[in-house]
Image (cartoon, rainbow, N blue to C red; front, side, top):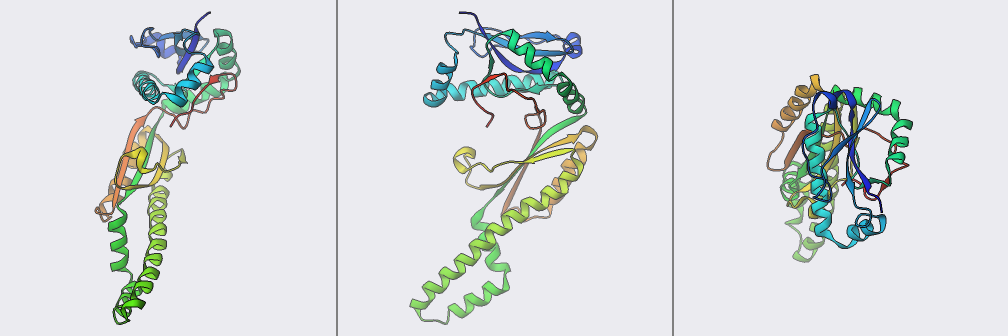
Length: 279
């Protein structure tokens, strides 16, 4: 059976003609990456044995072999990052696999104008991410101490019989919980409004749970921005100033980049054999 084609991403042909592709190991840890010119666009790919990487096999691995998934996802991310550092790069999703070069050629040709426009945008911009974490215990204490109405209720509860105090304290906890959620939303949205003004595009993503982050704090905001290179310093400074004004025992702000343009290099993959999505 012939080989499949694993597609990492796309670069302008003129760039790869000036800077030769580095020797990078392929998805199967045996082959090497190579370039496949398709007019003004070049695909960065590797060959995969069809017997070992057909759709059924990959589906089984994704669902049943966590070690395999973590290893391959790490390889994909590291390879994408290395290519992004060398070229104006459009990254493809994890496990984007084509059956043959004819299908790949057809997909690139049918999206050539869109891809060319994406290269122009990405050449002048960088993708940055913004994640905000909250220490809920410290925020809860801050709310209790800073809200006069809650302070007044606490004083009144202390004068009640012990049996009544228990139920009234539950009411306060419920009120604090509502304010907690409101404050977490307000904090993220406030910073987002400030930084999105220097970005040409942005996306607000789903927050990760603690199992995914491995952190004690709760993620309360998760977004990505496409920032013109000349405005990256402004983007960072806005975040630093905002962070300086906050109670650092409550909030932790992480702005990281530049990243491969996972979120802002739209590319239709209707022809691709794509078996998994980015995390």
